[in-house]
Length: 56
Image (cartoon, rainbow, N blue to C red; front, side):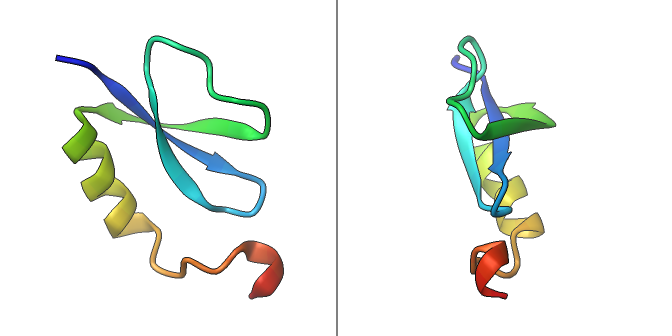
């Protein structure tokens, strides 16, 4: 089973990334990892305002 990381960028937008590779430039791990669905569920709970930070 593949493990994923929850990552966030400077605009506070969230995504998931395969845990066995480094996130792309501009994205930082949040510390949450798990299955794809676990990561997506976590993002749904924490990312309540999907507008980029600069648009808020």
